[in-house]
Image 1: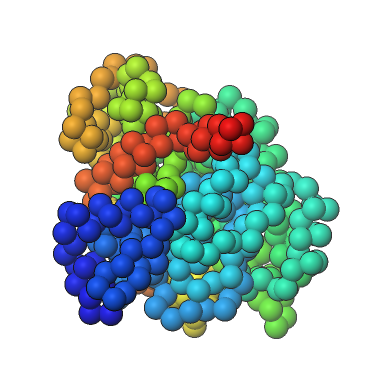
Image 2: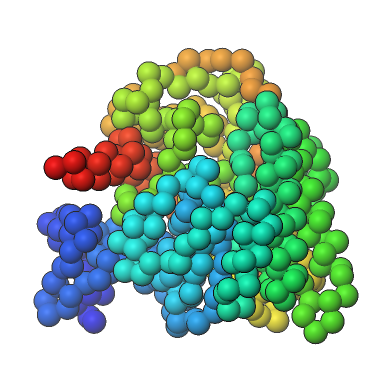
Length: 424
């Protein structure tokens, strides 16, 4: 309605606050004569971010017309997976999630439902369990595509536990691909990583750069990419493979509702979750690993991308590649990054500004497997997928801080509240 569009463009502070409070309580809001559902409340409360995170955006937003296609999302309760599931549901897809919950929480499903007013189908399945996976595929109607997020992802941990990473990441992917082939599901979006570029000889990085890795995590991603390239060349008759490899740079941020975000188990391995935990009082200070790199301030430089922009890239990989005639090859690769590099100290300063606090930090030795500088040339994704990263570093820090402020202990806050309610 016109009333809704006016409210979403320029909400009053009172209306924006009411929309956020109502969303957190699972209520609806009345604007004029229009009841706002959860996704519309987000547009009122956070018009800029919501336009990229829910299906209210024009032009480059998620799908404007519903799709009945069935998508299997592995690792769908994880950080990037859950944000992508939100956009899939808002786009009208039927979503089935498989996840072993090794680094995520089942309550994410409740949060996703609160945001979208839809609940994805969920199965607790370990991809390395071929029998379990076979049973799932056998019982389900045919999936139109798979988005494969599931996998271990910490660089430092992979150096300490390489066999675990190879068994889980490559072994699980092999089981998944066997089931996809057996049940004639041959459309795949794979969650790869910029770590496959190793220590790049220059920046920005294009998709045709030499591939080399500096850590076991990156090596597993590259191995899976190679398997998928081989698979795409297979003569599969009337059902050929179509595969999109998305090489992520550094996803950060959270959904603008503050209901879902990154909640690592134990000590965070990634920069922004650690900074945000320092800001909220869970950690004493940040350790900056490496201050002698050949960068502007001696600290590592990375291409940070808002998780909502990143998730949007998966929707466009489906729509403008797998489900269209635009794909030039059976296997295409795209960088998903902003094309802008920020140092660790840049991020400390930006987050301090977002939260209104000084972030204490100390300098430490370099971390094994890290590189000095890494940022993308995202032009191929822009030209072929019609994808652009629109949210800046201020949005990323603000949304991360909102998530952390609303959930100081991450999803553990909800666990504690549920336990208290059950005991009452």
